[in-house]
Length: 611
Ligand SMILES: Nc1ncnc2c1ncn2[C@@H]1O[C@H](COP(=O)(O)OP(=O)(O)OP(=O)(O)O)[C@@H](O)[C@H]1O
Ligand SMILES: [Mg+2]
Image (cartoon, rainbow, N blue to C red):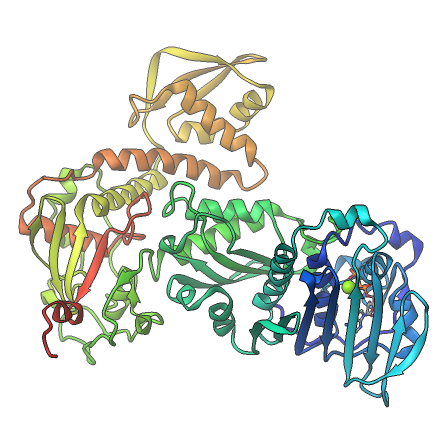
């Protein structure tokens, strides 16, 4: 999301030796896609507004990247090809605060050493372009508009061993296109086109972020994701996170950028994973595009030769911010499971319903996309601020509910987002009527979520009760486990786990959570310790919450109303109201939807009415 105008161009200079020695060295060019990535990086650094990539044989025979950026003055062309010569940084200080994609002065030199490379460039004030052939060093006038074209032919022509490592042309092409996609997602202000052997394979026109997301990730992505824009201390997090229903079998639609640079970062991946934990279970992979814009001095981009990894100065801070922002985006406003709703616009009351306690809050951003979440519906009838929910535990108490305390004052039934209960179907579903038509609720799934969220709230208020073990369970522990148990004793206590060291290599479990009487104390202790140790760096506080939440989720499943339990209309209505007041109520703890809307339009269509 870094769309800052390129800084005024500075001449290319050789980096001082002591700075050269600071720069992460290693293989820059592995395959055509790495060339494409480096050349597009350069075009963007040059302030291009249009970047065109032309490939032959998947990029193995030829890669040409053309831009309309600032160009390179003819006298500097040879320098552009020299190792450790760059226009982008001069000093260590500038390296530490670098905001351009490039800084090593390495890419063109590395590319030219394994291919036949030429640069054609024309700066704004030049009468014509100049072409420099890297191999012969020959400089000759050439024709082109302002900007630069870099031509790279016969990659690895002189190193057949490396050429052999390349995959099929189709595979190399796919990687090269993916490299452009990554840039394009982050830079909707720049137009991109990819040609392969004279055919246009991809084209992304300049436009808004939303448009670019839709162009690259598909129209559905907008409807199936939540926007996020959060300032968290020294960083701003922007992007879109896919709803659980949009999750995929493979992690191939996960885009994370730090200061505009595509990175693969374990810490951020963990933070995202953990934010999804509540709504996405199993092996499903969420779809997301996340831009982390952070003060450049708080992140080191000079840790990996291809810049695919970064190191944050305060990783805990980033972990916590990402986790919180994504959790919030997934929870409210705009919970999770998309609901199949009317393809036509939904008719809504235009004025507040007198005395209802609700005011009409306008269409949510996704309403026109014919998918709604509970929170969207809720937003249509945004309630006045409510009193905090009382914490309850058992299913009986939840259902025997007095709707009064936990939900707003009496309201005309049609005002409830989830409507008025009509009855129960097959002991599994609650049927209700709302302004849009029919609502179908999976009562166990919905209740499970309610109980779970309440347990979490309860545990946030106080420690979970511990059940002392008559005979402490002991086990052989690694030095790390012992150290973690001692360092984190307080937090473990709060989970109901009392661990103490019996010696250098042995731990004793003296209590477990009372709510988990059947849990194997040793296994429980070990897994909690493992989670704690694994990510001790990455905000341990949240991991404890996560481990705790897993326990709570298990408990919730046992606490939730079972199928085939007959409910009275009052109980059903109470459940619907609880859902409306519960975060993430669109999904059960296993990521399945808890309710669906069947619109009047759809019902009419079923009965061919109005045709
Ligand atoms: N498309 C371009 N438009 C304008 N100048 C360019 C372009 N490509 C390269 N240059 C100039 O050539 C120099 C060398 O490019 P090169 O990619 O080798 O190094 P870099 O971008 O400075 O650092 P890095 O190795 O990290 O990419 C750049 O610093 C820049 O001044
Ligand atoms: Mg570069």
